[in-house]
Image 1: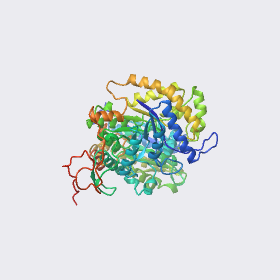
Image 2: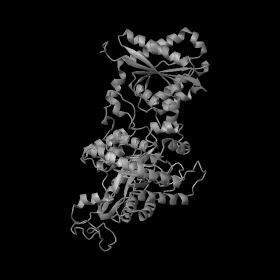
Image 3: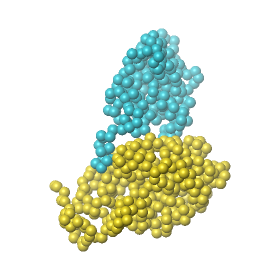
Image 4: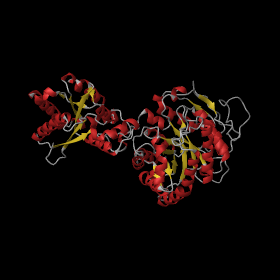
Length: 229
Length: 395
């Protein structure tokens, strides 16, 4: 099915890590690299690009407060709309995902990530926050109807010295690569896109949605009411 | 092309003088603004409807009736009339009356209103906002076109043998615009009826409303009202003009910085990213011409001027600059660029009368003697067909 000339698959790292280098981004990048390697081993080219949320903080702020989406932010959203997989990474602040990370998710269209493979990554200053990916991030992406992979990644300072972190990275990469290779996103959206709730003007552009009028259901109760009832 | 101004009817403290106008002062200032726009030769004055402070215009038909009495040529409109929380029967009555008193210088723009608490104040539920807007307009459309209406819907008591009085002027309903910024159902309804579609064109990036406007155009054609490019499109915008660009920025900055929207952007950044025009007449002209490039030929351009606490004297000056230095150039330029056959305005009353009657006699509805109700017997109007008996709704 996949030929060497096919478009490379796009894996996007979304990171709310703030320091440089950021351990959050570092962990996400390890997963990204491992996923690319695994896919490459199966003859599938994949490219990684990164959306650094700190660089978008001003536009995310404006979008949160007045709904005004600036060019950079819209560019990031459009890239996510075309992504084959997303690695979502955040530091843990005050026992939760960072406010920046949550604010970014808040301004995304609800249907932007439907059926997309998403890996959950978090880092923290203490292992007491180890459940943040599963208990805080996973519900967020469930709301967005993304396909979160089974293994989430979490690293406290002591984990960086542990071989087990690499094992988890490999497991997560295996899961992410398998979903990307399967084409599961298109299998779902091609058939079922219209069955999800959408908002007009969304940036979501899955393969199953027709380019223009396709996202509008003319057979809804409201549309019938619009045309005289 | 029609050029005019629209007001949200906000009462905002002037950040330069520190003065906050009273309701009395602001209401009189609005009448003076409309009068001045009329004298200066602008084509349209529109005002919004709000039911909470710091806005004053809860009663646009009363306000516009006073303005109609004091103006000669300007077209009066709304921005918007709440089609959700108002009873469509009252809209039919109030605006038909206003249409008579303004002698046909009236159209109106319907909007939903997005202030959550307003809905329960009027016994409505905002979660049903789109339903309300669509159903209420379906009824309004009939009330203005049928002398006697039997009707049953979800949101108001049924009507049996109801006649909305007065009948529209010359039995031709006012032209209706549907205002929306993100709801395809509203655009669909505008297209279905061949009505106008208006995007407020504020508080969003340049071109943001194009997908919805294009959708409306395609559906207008789909329903057989004409080509997509002939559909009736209106756009808003905001403008602040000074002879010299740097003065426009300097003078407008305190008002912009005081905006209630929480915009953490510089005026320069805002003016370059959004449809807001700040600058010399030439800059405002160029910005507005770019709307035509983005949205295609359109029929109505309205600017918000009297907002953010701008004092009356400054608003009047802005009207003069618009009318003397911006609109004449735009009028010429936009008409020159307009594709052949595309209407230059939405239908005026005179055009609608002509379209309905040609050179024939114009209907002037004249009632029969009062007989209590219209549920039985023929038309309540003298020119009705006596054999056409109103039908009882089936129980």
